[in-house]
Length: 487
Image 1 (cartoon, rainbow, N blue to C red):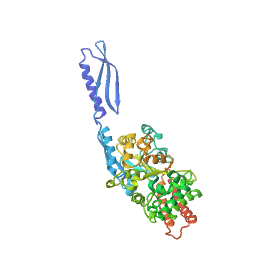
Image 2: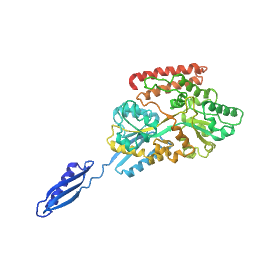
Image 3: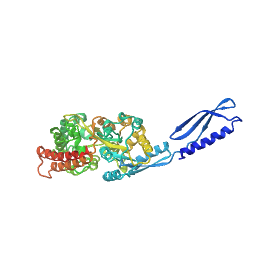
Image 4: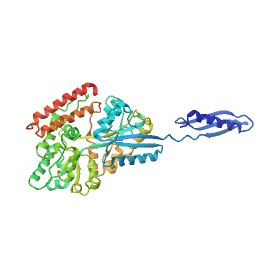
């Protein structure tokens, strides 16, 4: 980029030449206005008196072309073709900003936390990164993330432009800063086989209305399986080996009236009587024989596969299953199968305290270590534009985090995606505190042990004693993490 002093010196030379060429009388400069954009002089307006007459001249200076920059973005394996999906957005962005190049790297979820925290502590991170919603506060506490300004947030439509539960994850409690913006939403609903429910005489709206009707519906499908009327188990869900183990329990805890932490985020309360009832109900879906016997050893991906294979009549999963049901088998989906032809979605049934679902997903962050922060913010703005949100969400099988895109007919009026859009209205997320990362790790460990109890690994399962015991032990561990100053 040409230095500002050189541009100004060139203009002074130009003005001197103009003065010499304007007649025998020496012109007197009466007034001049300099228009400056990003420190580049673009136009000089000069009013002069030449031989007794007022003359106005405009001298323009062509600004140098924008500096070419390269940005690096770290993303996770979003959708069946992670690089292809983000490259589509990169191509569209680079058309608008030909001086900016974007290089994307896909991090595996299993190793991403280690790589991101190493980058945060070393100060050598990417320009932009995707972060899971529950990771933002912890990475921000390491000083790695650049806060977005009020003007930048306003340019993205303001806080009200984003799904509320997602926006909460971008503002660490007590920080006063917005260190991320929501990118896409992961929420949960029940995916079921219409033909199975029809065969056993169940109406979906009644079957999924409350915990009691849900339990009765599962019992009816189990009875039909035992009688040879249907071949599927009623439901499948993962157990101790799942990375979503806490998210799987959360809707039932909230539905029972429980919470994870107290209002001040100073102590765990997931061992309250209300929360315990939620844990009990969810565990009972296994102990009553509604699932295949091996599900508690499986993860989410494995259980998701039980649905298209016909092993279970329903699963609790996310919007990516909609895309999978419409994707051919040779491209990783199960379109054309019996399960796809009878694919339907319903919200999770309401518990004593109401209907709730977990809302997660991912946020976008700009790193303090970036040498091109303004350009990085421009790419983030592009990724949360309505057009990009609709296109990218559809390509990866997730919901947009921008309300305007979420309300687009592409999602809202779709018979399957539309149910997930409704579920977002009943969604909750976890507190945005720095300690949540280690808290979640502790909960995954303790709830994994609880699933062992449920499976009978540690002797006959007694929900009235074993569930409170596990939760009380988990509370001690979580309270210690909170007391260490991570809240």
